[in-house]
Image 1 (cartoon, rainbow, N blue to C red):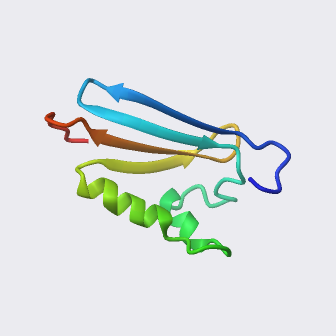
Image 2 (cartoon, rainbow, N blue to C red):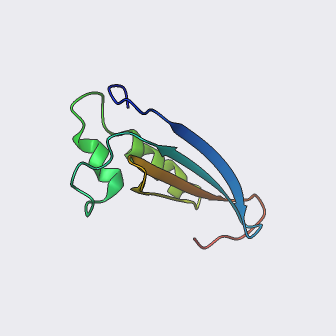
Length: 94
């Protein structure tokens, strides 16, 4: 989002049927750049700057805790990253 005129980042949380907590990070960055059909988490492995593995590591950590991490295109531009994690003492099947 660094070089874009509109830079918005929204972080939100909500419970999912009292079984999980959902965290969403929504931005107005450049988005997938014409690669909408690719796995959104893999798009960031193609970055020219940085290590490009942060989301892969994040997904491994979330899945190790019986959660789920995914992304989709933000209709307002950019991307929406979502993560569901089970609440302690509750079953969660994703």
